[in-house]
Image (cartoon, rainbow, N blue to C red; front, side, top):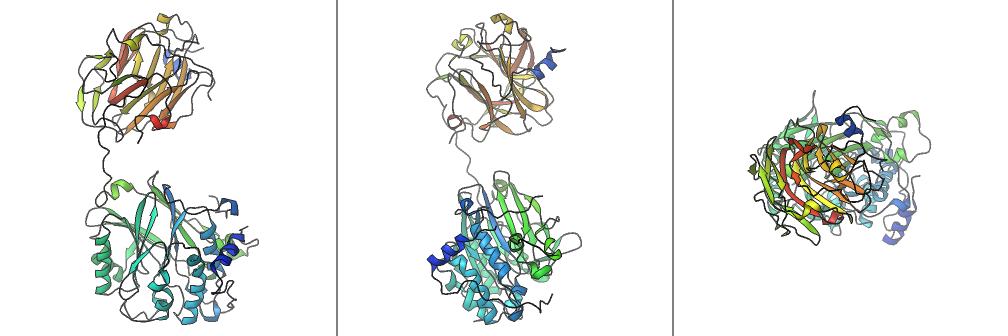
Length: 599
């Protein structure tokens, strides 16, 4: 597209304005009765306790949080038509850079994909260099690289001095917080940014690398063997009929650099349009996500569109969005601009699922947490591990076994012990008749913790994890169904949790409900009562359906506790189906920070 009618505006900030003034100037900107026992259990319990991007206000803005599991890599593709002799307009890119400086998306790094300008002339290069200077003033990490329009496209990175190198060579980045070095020719660079409590490597590579350039890039990877790497370059893949495909030069980059370096998990390039993506498999058998993003063919030279790669390591996903901050900040839009504010096709707005720990295990494995001794804290009533039947708290709450149970090495990654016991719908454990815990009422509160794992295809609902043998009637309870056990932590239908208890202060049952647990996954579950209210937790997260009516203590008839079984009217109906790890009972409420999973 030839924007011949556009006039080159004056730069909104002069290159020689001092840092303090520019910081102030930038910060002032703001864009703008039951029929069956099971149905009774399900109902039991007393009263339970495509949007467009918005530009944040100044109060919401802040520096990047390098510890958060959620962070953003911002990508700027070809801006060449915005810097085209006297036909350009820097306003869209200036608005984009202001947005990235002042937004609240936790942007930790910014990458331009080349073709900064149309002709690579000194005047064009200097103009876009002035726009990027606001990032230098604010000491924000960013990378640029040369595209074929920024220099003589018949040359490689051994071309020598150019206006691009004069403006964006290594000397520009000497105060950058992320810049770590450049190839001797100056056209290839690498950056290291910090996010999610680790370091990430960015390779910003020239439009055409020489053999020396490839050797330099391989050496950078060799020197940083544990850093996951994002490779940026101008040309790599283009939009094929079904997905992105390697160009001829892209095939060379793949063969000489990407394929054999497992650290490279994501590549980003411009040059071609329309946008596209694909997943390729490297020599280690792992996925490499290859993306092309370029909007110069759209209205106003792409309106300085940006891609936000929003990493979420808690969810193991990268959410990708594409929009124009310049258009977003306009009060009035013409008919063409309305279509460009945010792009939402499958090529422009999508999610990339990545199990980061698994993907990076080949070069930066997460060390397993070592086994720990029994976590006996003040107030511990009982602590059981299933490689033996004794109570490790020393309080005499030993166990006896009925039927067969299998020892296993499988365990929750945060379990103090590295073992478990497999319950195959038969066999269970119970406290000995003389165990002190049998007669305890826990009126000051309690915390019950366990590590559990349900097998794939779990089909054994209403099997108990931790249950009293005696029914409510044995303690004089007549409300609800008095044949139900005095208390039970159950795995109900669909693998959901249930805690049902006859408290000391109620005649009927108080019931907490949890959400369905994924199968073939280890979970830490906890029941916490503070003397009045009970809450269920899974992996330290408080669940929803917790009663607000006070429930004090646990009624008892001096009967044993069952581990891995459920009883109705003193008849043991079902054994647990799955794995059980460490179980701990404490005589007071614990905060999440003191659970068995605590670091």
